[in-house]
Amino acid sequence: MEGELKPMDAEQLREYGHKMVDFIADYYKNIENFPVLSQVQPGYLRKLLPETAPAHSETLQNVLEDVQTKILPGVTHWQSPDYFAYFPSNSSVAGFLGEMLSAGINMVGFSWITSPAATELEMIVLDWLAKALKLPDEFLSTGQGGGVIQGTASEAVLVVILAARDKVLRRVGKDAISKLVVYCSDQTHSSLQKACQIGGIYPENFRVLKADPSRDYALSPDTLSEAVSHDMATGLIPFFFCATIGTTSSTAVDPLLELGKIAKSKSIWFHVDAAYAGSACICPEYRGYMNGVEEADSFNMNAHKWFLTNFDCSALWVKDRSALIQSLSTNPEYLKNKASQENLVVDYKDWQVPLGRRFRSLKLWMVLRLYGLEKLQAYIRNHIELAKLFEELVAQDKRFEIVTPRKFSLVCFRLLPPPSNEDYANKLNHDLLDSVNSTGKLFISHTLLSDRYILRFAVGAPLTEERHIVGAWKVLQDEAATLLSKC
Image (tube, rainbow, N blue to C red; front, side, top):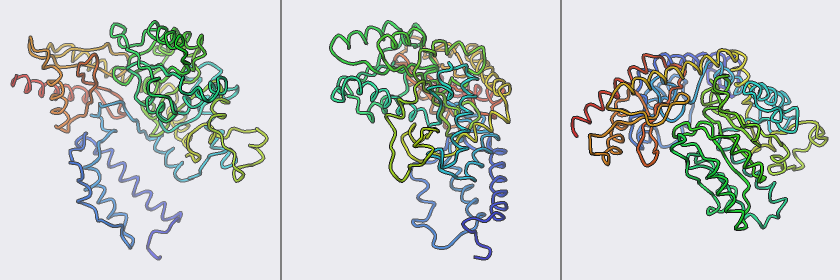
């Protein structure tokens, strides 16, 4: 074994760890040299790697050379300052250090006894974040509720829909599952549909209500009220409603207060998805978008989107932790212990789908401590200012139009078709998206709003500066000019 990598050795870890940190730092230093969107073809990697695993060990240098020449060309660079697609997925020095420490400790914290610090730190930092968001006290761990870190918003909405389902079935009987109805708008994230599929909700009872374009694609309370009343009149049981602060397509904000009152009056579980825009609500000037959250039963935001916390870290708060625990708890003999049996502690295995869980609170703790709320607020505000700049650039070019008012750091826009050729607009913008992304100079994504193909420009990468906004706009203008010249 002399000279070879041991399963674990402190000095080898020090040596190899330094090399890996250097490699990653160089990656960030040179990240602008890569095409933002990977330009490889499907199946490219199988042609470059052996068909079987090596029988004998290789050197780290050889592996890193393969990363450089074979892996990185197939990576879409989410941390690039020219990445403007989907929503951001922030990395940071503090988040990276927390992730490194979590990997180093490498515990599996499914119950308090498996690592008390993991459970207790998670409770504390989620209370910190809840207070920063000015969530109602019912969401704090000091009461009947509390927070838990899930992997993604998809997992968060799944566990609360399971909790809501079982809560209502305990009241009306398990055979009534065929009558349970879920409500959302046509702007709600598709993860809710998947949660319903997993949770056994009948597809015909999944109500997708049309958002109101005149309200910037927010859901009208009247629309929800009418749908609920109609279903109740036919003997169905409305039990779950999801509203959104910052929808995926256009960052629409549903009117939480009015919608929440409707839900509460009908004993419907009210979940608020703020996966993207929740981060902005630590700024007092954007906290108003959360007005009405006091009516909610659960609230979710992704710290790994726009809060400098490396993926994955999705914060979920509930007012009634017992609803989660009753739905998701198991108690096999081999996991029994005194602290759990005496109900002295929180066991997060009962708040999630899997048993095992990582020490994710470390990176959120690192982010909150090494940056502090003031710097995090400034970080959010800077991205919003950069998005304002892009919005202004688009508005000044009569060939383009802003489709919905910008609320946070997403700009929805489109290239206008030639006069009297509106039918061509969707193809034109699809072609513009493809041509811009094919340059490798930036990466944007799209959506459909009122059957119109819309381009989305989401500012949020940690390294993005004003020059990147200006450069991206120049590429968009140039590619648009080329397309329009062919019309």
